[in-house]
Length: 157
Image (cartoon, rainbow, N blue to C red; front, side, top):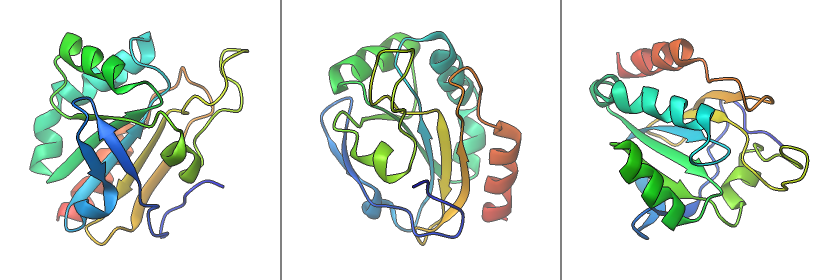
């Protein structure tokens, strides 16, 4: 079942591209932007995350911590982050626990892969409550960055 606005954000423990453990509940007191994406090194995912990288000052100014999350292994995410120069944390949901908890996991992707994250965006406020939720069925679609940025500005204002 998908996570919705007003709901307490499901906690998770994931590992970043350097094998460091990251827990959502430890982010309490910060605004968090979670961006689930299907697969590293694919064209739309690269374009999405590069847009965040290139506009990171907007998220820094909104005091938002950005996490990109996929089911890729941490080593894949490390290479992806290095190759693209991402200036935010990528988290491995290899066991698909966070993607399942947030309701953004494909049963099948590209006709044969099972358990790939859907492209999705969630804003979680300083109290751990979901303030924005967008889950895209088509992996070719991009999150509504205008709506995301507007909501971050409201939370920051």
